Picture 1 (cartoon, rainbow, N blue to C red):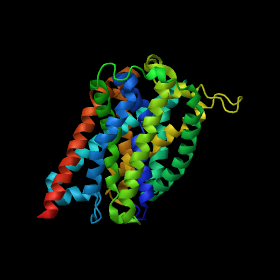
Picture 2: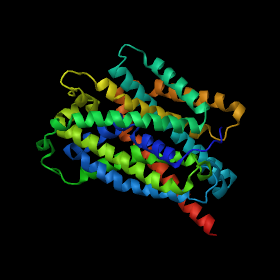
Picture 3: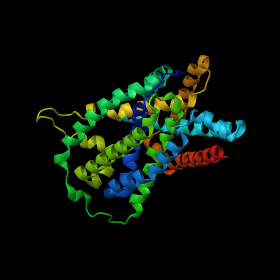
Length: 357
């Protein structure tokens, strides 16, 4: 593993990609299904809940922290309990990787390569991920900044072009069935899209060149990510209505088909949605980096290949179709991420106790 320094800006960008990584095929679809036309309210609820995770990250990775999260866990819990906790977190990270790889690959096949066997997509993405991770966290970080630049341009083109499609009548009546479903949708969005940001704790403060700016960039990019999700959700529902939004697997993609730039450039949705592939790619890179961190350098490449092989194998065995994937995302995946959230709450409390003794 490389020891090159990275900046707080780069860490913030990585956090943004983690939050946005599965928005288009998990977060947005789920909250539309649960909260209906009030899905944009669910984003606000998720934003508020996410502040808890943000506080825990800043508490665990404070300015005096010299360890990545795996070493910190061993330090505050001891060798045996710490090793067990690290193993549990690694397993959860692999599950998140499984979900991300399937979602990304299924999107690519359904919209671009319909006649391609999904295993070829798995392998192609895995090769790129393993190669990028082998170059170290500094390469992942620099790649994230470059990809964010293009993502912002594509995001602005897509959403600005759709402003004229907005019909506020599609948002009425507000809270037709009360606050229950928007809150539930917000909880699901929080668990599926925000809780995984604990991945960035694998990057300790002593690896960051401008430690004093860490909190500022973490907070900024958290707000940036959630505002992006809010805008996307609001425009999707107000442009196509809740009935159509629930009908499609990728409503955000479908609405992009309405865009026509300068009156003659049509079908640019395939270019705009490339940003979703960027997000999934960086997410997978961070998951593999997290799981393989602390592995001896001469065996790390083999270990990464094994981890990606496990992720591919489980996808092929467990997710036979989109129905099975959808049921897992709605009924099981939030509880897996809830356990991750609880683990890091315990880590934050334990760190506070140990360091105050």
